[in-house]
Structure formats: structure tokens, C-alpha cells
Image 1 (cartoon, helix red, strand yellow):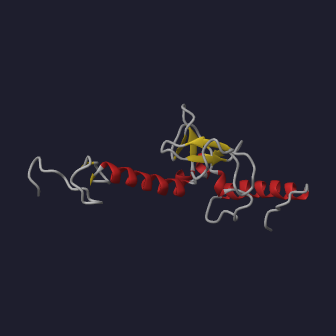
Image 2 (cartoon, rainbow, N blue to C red; image 1 turned 180 degrees about the vertical axis):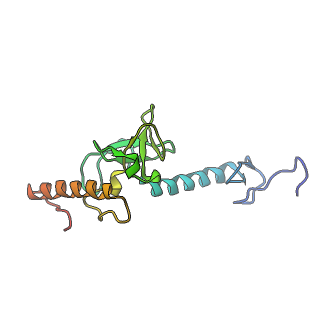
Image 3 (cartoon, rainbow, N blue to C red; image 1 turned 90 degrees about the vertical axis):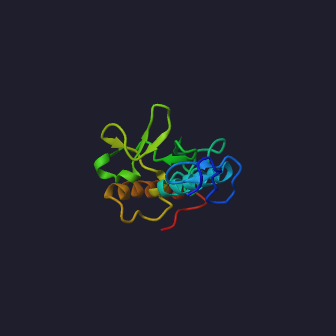
Length: 164
């Protein structure tokens, strides 16, 4: 164990300068640069896990697969999520890790929230995506509704119909 007051070593780059300090769990001793990189990696992994992969403004809040406008919300960790518009599901029908709530500041919060209803990420129920597997029946119902919307759009002369 090092002496009291001895400079700490960054566990990632091994530097002893550059603001190395103990960042707490789960990071440990990191310099400023490595801490920023680890935070970004953690946020990226969380975004992928939660479906918060939407482009931010000024890009339009549309799904890159189906092209329909969605309810884009910022998350608390600097990413954006496209939420299924006008769809509220009972919390009992949605696994906790797939529930979204809108906070008083307009940010989307994943996991737990007030009330008995929640929102879901459009990415999981886009009609152009695969049928939801291993998810509650409510997701299949919303996906099927989106698939029908896509088929109706295709029948109206859409140049890029959904796959069958």
C-alpha cells in the first residue's frame, strides 16, 4: 500500500499526473481523461441496453427504419430515446428495465417511476424491425400495430415497403 499523500496511479493509463484521484466504485483511481472515457463507455453501454440510441437535435425525431415521427426525449446521461408515441402500458405488463417515464424536467427515465403506466422505446416495437421475441405480449401487440401502419403506407405508394 502506498504512503499517505503519495500520488495515485491511474488504473487505466498508469499516469500519476493529470488529476488522478479515486473516483469511487466502480471506477477506482483514474486521471481526468481516462475517467471521461470510462464514463462515456458506461453511458454508451447503458444506451444500447435501454434502446436510447436516437440522434439528438437538430436531426428530426424520426425512426431511421420506418421513418415515422416519434417522441424523442433526452435521458439523464446525455443520450436520446425515441419513445412510442401515444402508447401507455401498464407497468405490470412491462419488465422494469424496459419501462420509461417522463420526469418533471422532460427527461426520459428508465426503470421506475410514478403511477401505474409507463412508456416503451420505439426501437423494440418498430414495425420494420423483427417481431419482439422473449418480451411480454403487449410488445407484440404494439409491434403488430406498427407493422400494419407500415403496410398501409406501403400500399399508398411508399417506395420502400416493409419486409414481410
